Length: 235
Image 1 (cartoon, rainbow, N blue to C red):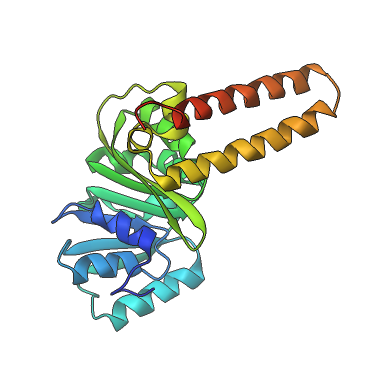
Image 2 (tube, rainbow, N blue to C red):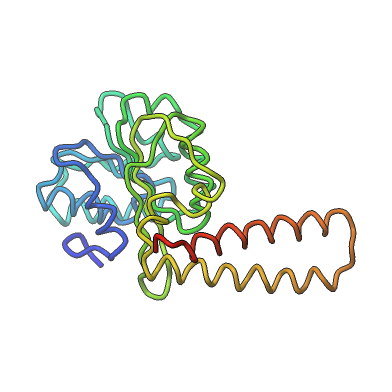
């Protein structure tokens, strides 16, 4: 992967960046995504934010190597603190982190989001918490993608301003992903069911305390929600 050829998942993230947007890529690592966006004429201006010194220095080096110092500003800062009001950022990308960490980044600096009209989020795990956050904070899902790369499965959530209501099943699985029912979607959730059933077997041997009974019921409910989606007639 480099600034000209992104990984499959980052290429998918890039595909949702509106032409002419001002982007802040949080946790930018080598700044490959901002460089790619500028090289391909999708954006003219971007911020690459990094909280760790090593990746921050790598991003500075990469931007200089690509000759994009006039287009991309690299900042060492914690999350959205990399964004300044004068930047005019309207699109934020956060990729390659867990869902809870992405949510904590968004929650730390809510004032930065006032001028933002699109969030493109790629959680490695627990996309569910991002959907819950979106409902609480007045964001709606514009699109969702699930893809597989190097034997790992990733979800990408594209959010825009708006009210949204989702069922428990839709929060867990993704309403749009349920509608598409791709092979990768089926693979991910079939594996989750297998894992949950293994946990149930372990719980059956652990006795019948109140906590264990509750955990067993929660897992059985999750299995039912997923099996209903995978067996849907709409598939």
